[in-house]
Length: 103
Image 1 (cartoon, rainbow, N blue to C red):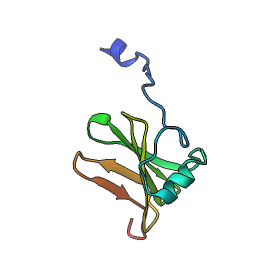
Image 2 (image 1 turned 45 degrees about the horizontal axis):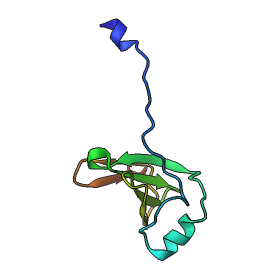
Image 3 (image 1 turned 90 degrees about the vertical axis):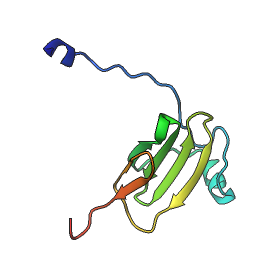
């Protein structure tokens, strides 16, 4: 019904991702950067993994960070070979997209 469509959304916070807090199981070079506690300033996309247990953050156009939402642990960072602006997950793979001369 129209009334159901007009209802407001309600947001429940269940977790926080806070660089510099919690554990880090990434490569030492990334843990050192992570431990500085810098916030994300240039986020292009967020993607939940299968079951909502992990979060992937595409930032700076060429970095992917992975987090465990169950434990709050920073899992790692991957530097991408090119700039991307969006991503999606289909329960088996993470797909990245970017603008190119072909569209």
